[in-house]
Image (cartoon, rainbow, N blue to C red):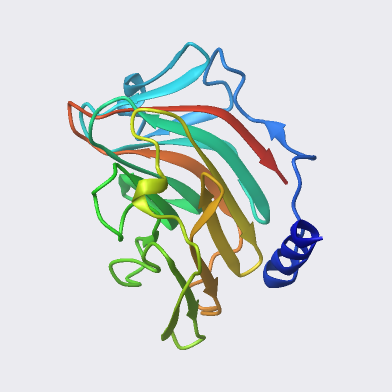
Length: 228
């Protein structure tokens, strides 16, 4: 009964119930078919090895973007830092920025190595629209009002750095439903944004993975699937 009750409360909180059904793979494990690097000059930094997407931080920052635009969805994948340190993340409802080949405009779920800070590992950012340094720190649920002001509350039993597996695979699920965006790492909510600022909110766009520059950074992704 307790399990059913907790599941029911989660559905009420976020307005939708989730299951493993309905996910479709968007990575074939062999090639980067269906994906494009932005900027294209950095495409060689992304490869497929052992059914994994590998990003090596040589040259400038880049993004590996999925071809289709998505609005309401769930994105599930696993990641592992092969290097000791690194900074990556997931673009959500993002759009190319004219005149800036390596930049995107949109939401960004931040993932970095353990110890990188609560504004990166498990936080929400927003690129290229002057909405501040970040939208929500790790462990926070932030409601953005129509005038842009924020209401911040702590999330109970939120993801903590010690919940991450260093040198091993971590499972992430990113949820985007109307004006609500949140993501989990290893089954724990990292942070959540409720975006009521209609003038700056994005309801649809591209998803993709970020690769910061840095010769020592190596990141791997696998088991990438989407529920539309």
